[in-house]
Amino acid sequence: MTAAPLSPEELERYARHIVLPEVGGAGQQRLKRARVLVVGAGGLGAPVLQYLAAAGIGTLGVVDDDTVSLSNLQRQVIHDTASVGEAKNASAARAIARINPGVTVEAYDLRLTTGNARELVRGYDIVADGSDNFDTRYAVADACEAEEKPLVHAAVGRFDGSITVLKPFEADGDGRLNPSYRDLFPEPPPPGMVPSCAEAGVLGALTGVIGTLQAMEVIKLVTGIGEPLVGRLLLYDGLGARFDTVRYRRPAA
Image (tube, rainbow, N blue to C red; front, side, top):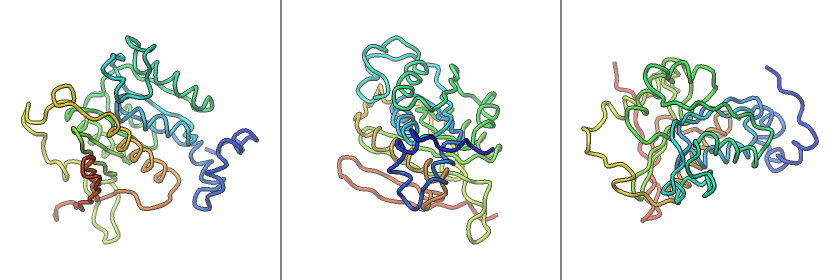
């Protein structure tokens, strides 16, 4: 599909992208044509949606079945006090329209499961997972692998976070298939081993750091610039202000 030429308003809006030789007008056109599904409109999904909307992603799908609560506002910056009690999808869509009215929002007021995941991801180019539970993470990852959709996965804990890009349907430079989510995390931890944010807490700004990195990886994938975090898990220690990278591979057959 060929996107319509960038309008004078779009040329001005995206001028700082277009002047980048690595992006340029062609890259901005790719952003405009792109369809990105964001799972969760919470702590990670908030900055992902905001920066992708600002970047000019043409269509953003949002999957979330929750409503905004007052305790969300410390980190879920796409929502505001007036949106407490409202569906997160509706609140997020309104915020996206304020940021960039040229972005189309497709909202799914439901929980992503193994039963509906493949149908949801099938209609998108890239998926960004901002979910906060292992059932959803495995369902998203398995669906993206089956449908051959790149997945930008991230997770946060109290003061630390991680992010990686999964393309297990493609091979690396050695002809070896890229690793999958299950190569990185073969099975979920026992119930209760990993406390939720409600139980353990999370520093609000941390979700902004990791969610913004997710948005960066999505933009790299869409425009074809840089080196995505395929086979690399980027770890961030917020208290130590330190980034580390762990490489991982698919086990040899």
